[in-house]
Image 1 (cartoon, rainbow, N blue to C red):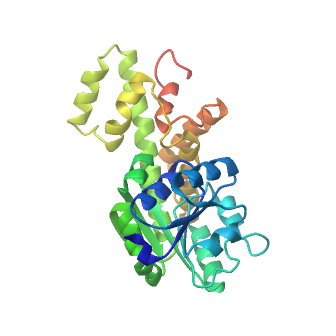
Image 2 (cartoon, rainbow, N blue to C red):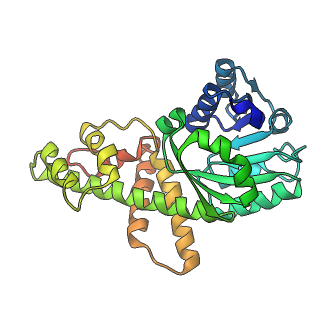
Image 3 (cartoon, one colour):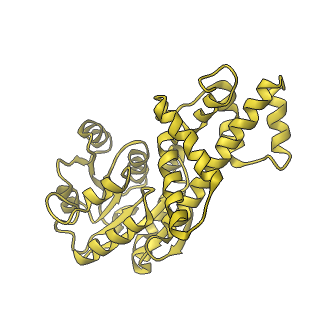
Length: 298
């Protein structure tokens, strides 16, 4: 049972965080505390799994030995690890933070430094997976930070994942995750263009996807998104808004390295266009709405 590894808190209980909490609870971990800026969803999840819906971040730290965070962006990450005011760092000595958000790698470095100054440990555990895998405990996790923190977290991370990899020091796993999402987003936008052009040419979509799957046009995205693009089924597992954000992280890394990445830049522009059209909360497969004839794009 997970209880031997201490109690667990989860900060950020949207689609991913809530399903991580549910899975750990099912596996016997003592999930004692949950928190979200949207208090209503924290209250609902707390009632479901028997946790405390906390009104402050400091309360989460006081109730849990290990705190998993799944927040939206750099600003949110800095806010929950603030140097003053309500913060997870209040009374954090001896605690372990496992941070799962896709954010700028330098933020993970900064958070590790803040945690260590408070007597705590911090580990980035970047997820190359989606909602279903969070619920089932089959995440693909890439970790960065102090190796002692990874070793401490490993039993819990094993419960959450089907594949677990230690990448290196703080920020390194986040760099890999940025590249994973950059390439995934490019593949998604490219598939949408290929299927959209096929539609315009009057080609059978089922046939085209089968040919793609058997040739160099194959990709994981074809398997997950191809039929959804055709059917216009864009139920959100990874939003267009997040695709834009993550492509932006990769482009920032490229700027720092002095590299031009025109495909990544063009892909981000497509997802930015979706946001401008009010489609940012559609799944990333919704980029097909810009490429299929007779849909929203021109």
